Image (tube, rainbow over the protein chains, first blue to last red):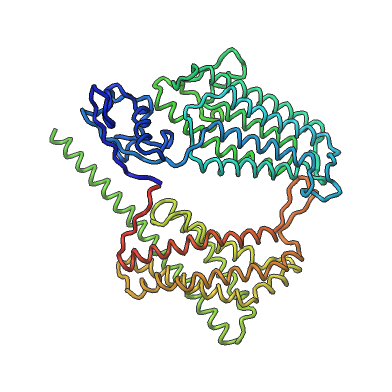
Length: 306
Length: 251
C-alpha cells in the first residue's frame, strides 16, 4: 500500500500558486495542500519524508529548519486508511465489558438452556464480575478524560486485530468463570481476599500513573519529559521502573487470575505481559536515547529484573 | 603513525580470518546436516519399499517406520533455528509452519500412545490408505529437497536435482495435503469416541479442551495456509528455474 509519489514544492515568499509555500510553512500545511490536489489521501494517512528511506517528518516541522533550498522534494508514502486512537480504544474496551456481562447473566445459547438467566451460586463469581467491569469502565473513562495521545491516528486494520484480541479473550475467560460447573479457588476466602487486595492496589496504582503522565504534558502539547515520583506514594515506583503503568496492569491481572483460579485468565495475563514488556522496552530505549540524564536505576517494566 | 596503520590492517586480517573460519564452520555443519537428513529419508524410503514388497500390504507399514520417521521429522526443527539465526535465507515463518504441520501429524495424529485402549485406535488410524499417500509424498519431497541443499553447499548441483526440487512439489504438495487431511478426517470418529487429549469441566483450572474440535480447526487452517505456501514455492520456482526477478511488494 505504498506509492512513491514525489511532491515538488517551491519555497517562495509569495504564496499564491499551488506548490508554492512560504519558508515558515509547516509540514502540516504541506499535507493539507497535498490533500487538496489528491483528495483520497487525507493528511492523517500521509507520510512525508525528505529521503524515500528516511524517517517521516512531523507535522510541526517548519520548512525553514529543514535541509532544503529554494525548492524541496518530498517523498510521499500512503499509510493506508487511518482511524483515531480514541475510537479504537473505546471500541476495544466496550467489547469486553458487554461480552463479560452477557456471560455473567447467562444469556441464552451460551450454556445449557436450563441455566438461562440464572446466577452463579459462588460469591467470588459476582466479585469477579464487579472487578472485571470496574477495570474496563476505568479504562473507558481514562480514554475519554485522562489520556493525552501523541499520535492522532493508527492504521485501520489495527482495530480488527485489537478487537479480536480483547473481545476474544474476554469471551474465553468469561465463559469459564461464569460456567455452571465453575470451581471456586482452592484456598477459599483467604485466596480471594488477597487477590482482591492485589487487584485494587494495582488499579489505584495504574490510575495514579496515568494521572502523573497526564500532568507531565500540558494540554494540546506534544512535548516529552522524564516522569518522576510525585507526592502520591503509588508513583514512587517511578524510581525503579520506566513504565509503571504496565507493571501495575500486570499486577491487576495477576490478582484477577488468583481470584478466579482460571487458566484462560492466566494465559491472558501471560500474553498481555509479553506484549507490555515489548512496549516497555521500546519506551525505555527511546527515553534513554532522548534524555542524556535519564535515571540509570530504572528498568523497563519489572524492578531490577526486566 | 605507520605502526598504528599496520595494527589496523593486522586487526582487519584477524577479523576476516574469524569470519572465514566462522562461515567455514557453518558450511560444514549445514553440509553435514543436509547429508544426514538425505540419508535418513533414503533409509525411510528403502524400508517402506522393502516392507511393501515383502508383505504386499500397507497395514503395519507406518508402525515399522514410526520411530525413524519421528526422529528425522522432529530433528527438522533445527532448520527453524537455522532460519532464525540467519545462516539459511528462508523465512522463519514459512519454514516454521511447514515443520509444525509435519510434527503435528507425526506426534498428534498418527502417533502410537502407550495406553492399551488408545493403541488400537492409533493402529486403525495408521492403517488408513491416506497415511501411505502422505508418507510417499513426504519421502520424495524431502529427499529431493535435502539433496538439493547438499549439492548446493558442495557447489556441484546437477540440473536434474534442481529440476526435481522445483517441479515435484507442483503435484506432490496438493497430494500430500490431501493425504494429511484425509488422515485427520479418518481419525475424527476415534478421537470423539475415546475423548483422547481432552479435558472436561469441572476441574480446578476452570478450563476445558476438546481435541475433536481442535482437529477440525487444524483442518480448516489448511485453507488459508496451504495456498500461501504453494504460491510461495511457485514464485521461488519462477525465480530459480527461469531467472525471473520477482518484485516484492513494499512492507
